[in-house]
Length: 162
Image (cartoon, rainbow, N blue to C red; front, top):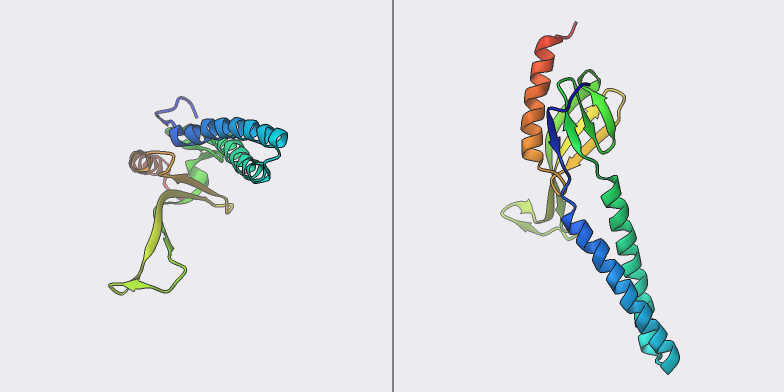
């Protein structure tokens, strides 16, 4: 793979907000915890400790997620995803999928189950069974899928199956 033809940066603004917000809340909870220890306010002690642990976990996991999201790059013979680099000859299928999360109760509207949440992803499956997912929550998947379809089509014209 030579030079990247297309590069798509991840959208981490929401995760950055959670990371910074978590750090601020942890600091406020530490101050509240220390105040509650001095004044013997047990309910504030319990509340600030509980909220501090939740904010700490939110901040840590948001930071880890930000660091794991890499730039998706498309080359003329392959692509780079957050899970690694692969060439077009190793790809079995590329699909644009929509996953729906249904209500845990069997409630239907118009003959279909009610969807609570939907997520669109690009699913890239390798011949070895590995799967690379690119979510619309972090990347512009419509433009990635469009460019990827064109590049794979051009590559398959140059390299027909034997």
